[in-house]
Amino acid sequence: MIRRHLPGLVCLFFSIFLLAQPLCALETAPGVTERTGERVPLDALFTDETGKSVALGALLGKPAILSFAYFSCEDQCNTVLSNLASSLGRMSSAPGDDFLVLTVSFDDEDTRGEAAYKKKNYMSAAGRPMDEGAWKFLTGDKTSIEALTGAIGFGFRKTEKGYDHPAALAVLSADGRIIRYVYGSSYLPADLEMALMEAREGRITASIKKAARFCFSSEPGGRAYLVSVLRVAGLSTLVVVAGLFIYLKGFGRPGKKDKR
Image: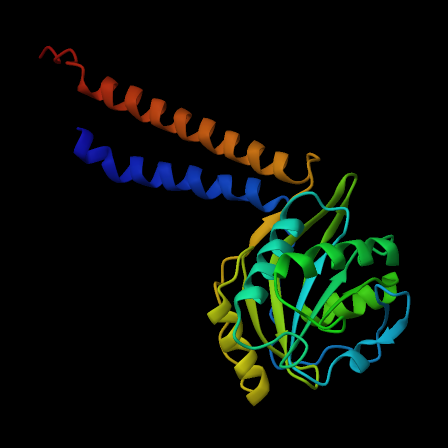
């Protein structure tokens, strides 16, 4: 009897699983849409940590590692910048001489003073001598920020308590083309060296660690949302398992024989 109904039970289980998928699709985390080979907006204007207004193109001229952050972030942004600083300190090529590092805030309310504070801390954390121009911390208005993040394909979402955003770097060629993306919140110096070599040669290649981590604000739209989804998924699984157990147990009971 059980064997006869097994295909139906399997179909029932997968139907419930598939119907549950829209729960996770109600709200998705902002991620990265890769745009390798495309060029960043060289005319986009930003303010550096000294208060000087600079066009993005004027900062380039060498391969560059581009990172995004918002300076009031207390979570993933600090981890990304700390680990990036650590990797810069262990690389054989020299920041400033061989390549540049650009950290751009996607919060248009961040100030030049906050940028200068971040620069001082993370330049020190790198633990190696670097020219002041080696690592620039930039702020900008909404128009410039959206032009750059849109060109890179970097998604972010403002919330009541911060921003939801992925953790990823973009490596640029000297003329502002996107060479590759490096995902995650920590980076091997060898991976960055390889990406920068490709940027110098103008070679566009596959991204490193294509598994982006995400930084969520503490409001319900972020991490709490994921916790809720996991709870719903767990509860749904328990209900399905319990239903199957009862169903199978019912079929396993000896029934009354027909009297003929």
